[in-house]
Every structure is written in C-alpha cells, then in structure tokens.
Length: 208
Image 1 (cartoon, rainbow, N blue to C red):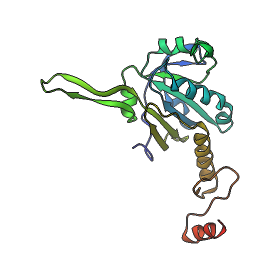
Image 2 (image 1 turned 90 degrees about the vertical axis):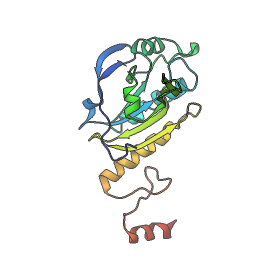
Image 3 (image 1 turned 135 degrees about the horizontal axis):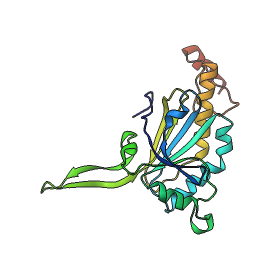
Image 4 (image 1 turned 180 degrees about the vertical axis):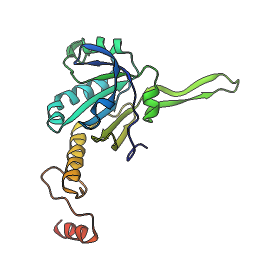
C-alpha cells in the first residue's frame, strides 16, 4: 500500500499532447505544483480501456480547474500508444486524448505501484515463469502537491472505473487541506464536513 507514502518516482518514455513522444517523462515535474491522478490500464487497443481513457479526457477540464493533472500508464510501448492515439474512436482508437500516456515496457513502474497483474516464479523444473498476467491492473492513485499518495484503488481487468469518484476524492483532499476538517461518508463539494473530534462527530451525526 502506498497511501501516506511518497509516490514512487520514475523516468520513462511517454506520449504527450496526443502526438509527441518524449523519452524522459516523470511525475517529479509536478511536485510542489500540481495534484496528480496517476492511473494504470492493462493494454492499448483493447475494450474497457478506451472507455476509461476517453472518460478521463471528457472530465479533464474538471481536473485541471482543480489544479490537477491526469496521467495514464500501461506496459505497452510509446509507439503503440502513439498509434492508438492516432486511431479514430469509430475504429476503436482514442484520438483526441491530450494528457500523457506513459510507456512502462520494463514493467518496473507497475511493480513499484503494486499493480502488476501477476508475479515472477519458477516451475517444478526450475525454469523462470510468470504467474498471472504481465500487464497492469486498473490501479488509480491520487497524489498531492508534495508527491504523497492519499488514495489508491485497484480494479481487476473487467471492472471499469467511475471517473466522478476521483473528482470527489480530489475535492475532499482539497477541502481537508484548506479547512482542516474531515470529510464523512458520501461527502461531496458543498456539503457539510466535520471536525475530527468526538464533539465534532456527535454534532454531525445529530444533524444527519
């Protein structure tokens, strides 16, 4: 688990702005400046993945107005990312996505974030093998401006994410940082929070 810890740093290739390959992308560039939603998805040119990637794009302005960047990552190559980004939606592509997609071909980023869908092992004859799937599960991490992870969730391959939930969690984090209160169950921006004391809890519960 990474919550309360610094997000693992890395330098890797990525496609930015939907069309440009860079070789030295890093989350370090956002430390001290931006919140980050960093998410992993299994593979390019698949089925659930484009729905999620495009859903993040549809909500991108909402994240950006909260001073947050969205970054995706899979174990595909940067060239495959670029090919998928260049493919129209009506042909199964994700054309129009503008946030960065990181290429974790060595699978080290997925390992460090604990989302690789399997593990290395040895068979009965001593040969190296891989148990499970050597691709990333649907992991999502909310990282604050100091590079600390405040939320992580990991879905199995068939289970798509609810993008609005990450906006809600981001709002909650911003509220906690600003007001020093805590956010109860089902809290949303504009709703009442509470003080982290016995009295605060009692007062909140008495109203609800």
